[in-house]
Length: 343
Image (cartoon, rainbow, N blue to C red; front, side):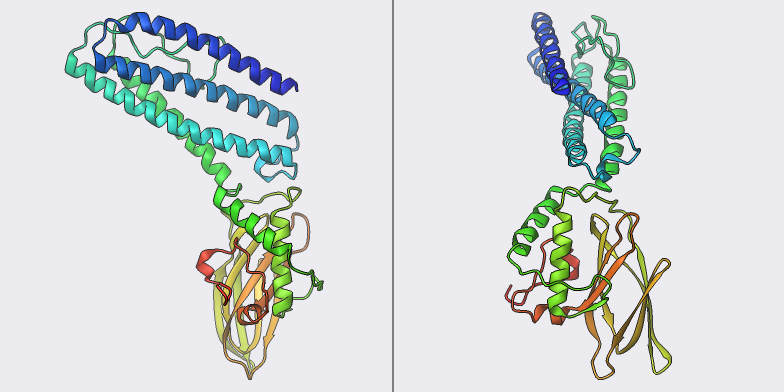
């Protein structure tokens, strides 16, 4: 409640300054041509909105600092409230980027207009004076004389802000799922809830089609569990695959497993008859494909819970699709091209 009250007070304070600055701006605009008036009004509105969002972002960060004290990135926290705050901050940064880009465009247009009309006296791009700092650099001091140099410096400052927003957004994107990924997880969860749970040992590596469907349903449940922390999605474990038949090496390759969230990774591989060894870091698993079978595509799923032993499963895609109602989750990467035969 204290945090919410502080946020509301900040918004009220900002609205008061917005009204004061608008009144001063209206008085000054009577000396400008129509094009310059439109640019100044639009620019002032964008600046005001950017400052309001910056204050909100700072308030969210203060709340995160209170809730998240173990040094874990908020995007990877198992606390649903912390993750919600992190996602809200991503949304604010996206809005800040859009607004700041429009500010830069208008400022550049204003510079062009000023050069066209001449550098006579006109009101500057005014920003409200605020008692608390909201940016890494101090806001510029305005004069009554329009200055092309000052506007160019303002463009450079906004570019610097944009760079910071992009960097923070990219860092969050390495962990937090996108809106589309969340939608796919929700769709997979609705389908998984219709399936009967068929238990199997987590230590079993080679699964049949029914067990493979259940394994995918369990992953769906973890992806939708708010208590399971997210993981960085820019880390792709390398799987070494070596197949021996009659004592001879008949196949060897390395594949990257694609992260799908919350320490889960998947890959589609093609296995030949024989004994195949899968090695990921210091862990290894063996798979035996009967000699009388042809080479076929398999789906590999890896779960590496923080602080726990990795769990790897592999099953033939044909066996999975042969099931009457297989769980083909929407979160599976499109490049795997695994679709139910009915679809």
